[in-house]
Structure formats: structure tokens, C-alpha cells
Length: 333
Ligand SMILES: [Mn+2]
Image (cartoon, rainbow, N blue to C red; front, side):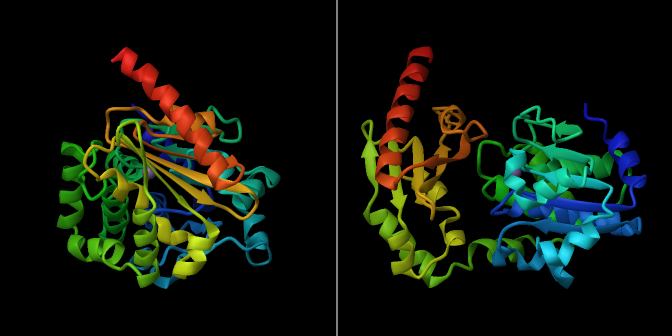
């Protein structure tokens, strides 16, 4: 059992708290931070949510009064100098905090990790709250609030609901259980408009995003008798569709929905001869070890990494590693 009472004591003894999450933040990272932010505000603690990426506009409903900010050295450096605690959500890897993480180290701020990704025993966190069984980090924030008898107001509930909904694929993925529905029920009881949140996030696709998806579908490759589906998103494709790097969200999940596909792999070209990798498994194969082979990690059935090289070269390596790993998994099964 995680000591949520202790976390509350640490929060209450802080005067200024920075909340953050991984780059390219999602509904879980930001939803968790937003829920905690509103609790901290109720205690009159000076706090900010700072992250390093562009804000994902589909989460605009979480960002009333622009409480979520993209970190800017000139704008935030002064404020940061008096921060005495950092609460980090859903990060998976400290490095994914980017310049916010660097600032935390530089200013020697105590950082607490709240996450449902495997712990890396990273010494840069001074305390870890890890629950691998949590469907979302938002579920852990919920546990924290319940354990400390903190009432879930509408804004807190909205953050938690968003976290749970996005990380469970709208309560469909294998991590969805009785508890996820119980939390959803509580949130809806507190006034969360579930269909409105769903529409904001999933029924707000830009034409550019759909054009890019069309290109992806046209260029899918299949291996291992259709069990592995892979695709490349090149810089050129992005330009042609008029899309941006946020538009690729959900593509790997979509490709996994194809009948017979067990593993979906995305290779997303980055500017500096690197590629972002994204893996999704239906559950027959564990894929976070594949991600690990490329310096990344994640959950058993949803993981990611960043690899060096051009997309074709990286895809080749990734397929080789994936095939090798599923072979041993087949033997073990
Ligand atoms: Mn998460």
C-alpha cells in the first residue's frame, strides 16, 4: 500500500509546488496534474503546471484560466527559484521532463514521482509512488484524494476522469476493470460530462490528421502472417497532409484494431536523424521489452522509445527485434 497520508504531509509542508508530466503530454499526465492542481489551490499553495511541449488543444476543457503552461526559461525561471517541491505525473522516465527536469536538478528541488510505469529507481526522484496495477496515473491521484478524505469537486473529477478515460482507451483496453468504472461513476456523480469530454478528445480530428491517417493506412506493412502491422510517418508525409506531430496520436491504437494484428508499430521520423517508436499489443505478446531494446520502455502492451537512424533503417531493426522477441514468447507460451 502506498503511503498517501505521507504524500499529503509532504504537500502540506511545501510552499510552492511545480507539477509536471512527460513531453507530448496526454490526458493521463495532464489530467492527473490538473486534479492535483485544484487540490493544491484549495490549500492556497502557490503552484503551476509546467511542461515542455505544445499544449494538446483537444484537452482545452482542462485548461480553464490557462493553468497549464509550456515551460519558458525567461518567463518561469524566477518563479521556479522558490519552488520547494515537484510533483511529477505519469512520466515513465525522468528524461522525458526535458528542461523542466533540468531545472529541478539545477535548483535541487525535491521531486516526487507518481506513476504507473515501472520504476527506474532514478536517483533524481527523492520519493517514488508507483502502482503498476493502476490503469492510469489519474487512478493514483484518486486513491491519494480518497485516502486523505479530500472531496472531489467538479474540476478535480474532470482531471481524474480524463486521465482514466484516455489511458483505458475509453474504458475498453485490458487495463479497464471494476475500479476504473467505479472511479468514472464517482466522477460523473460529481458533475463530469462524460460524453462531452469524449467528444472534445476523440471527435475533434482535423482534416490534416485524417489525411495523414489515410496515407498511413495506404502504406501499412504486415509481417509474421499479419500479426505485426507497421507503418512509417515521414516528415514528408506530415508536410503533405499539413499535419503536425500531435496529429499522430491514436494511430498505433487504430492500426492494432485490424483483425489478426497482434502488434502495431509506428516509426515516426524526427528532425535530428532520430525516430520515435510506438508499440501497441493486443495482449498475446509483451512489447515493452522491445521498446527497452531501443532505450525506451512502458507498459506491457503499450510502450515507446526513440531510436537513431532514418525511418527505413529503424523499421528494419525494430522488426528484427520484435520478431526475435515474439519467437521466444511463443516458445514460452
Ligand atoms: Mn498513463
